[in-house]
Image (cartoon, rainbow, N blue to C red):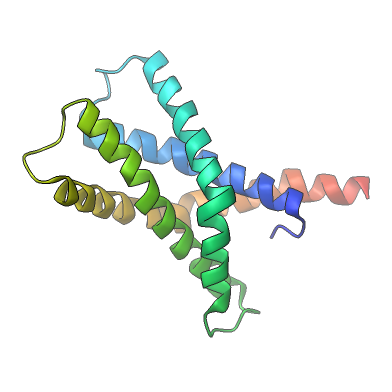
Length: 160
């Protein structure tokens, strides 16, 4: 998909945006917080989470996920395998990292359940991973790839 560093940044930011919006509302719904947090509060959280997720994706998780995905022994000419492999490692890394943010938020708002921090963290990771991987593979990934080709790739070929 992206062929230049600039395109890679655009693609990553677009993917982060889609996943952050969906995952934020998923977590708000699963914790019964829709209606208890103001829209201003939700917007603030979305912006904060987007900045954190984008930095993680661009500098830590993204490079690590690509390195792992492309080091595995499979046919890299098979675009579907590349997409699934990259999605799996990106989602895994982002869920592990962003669940720490969720754990911290829950801890500081005194909304953790009686289990230990580790048990709460593992619970958050599982709930987020179960939702995030299909979301990435079925909805956000295809939508972002379509929008990327339509608005980023076509702009480059028109101006070249």
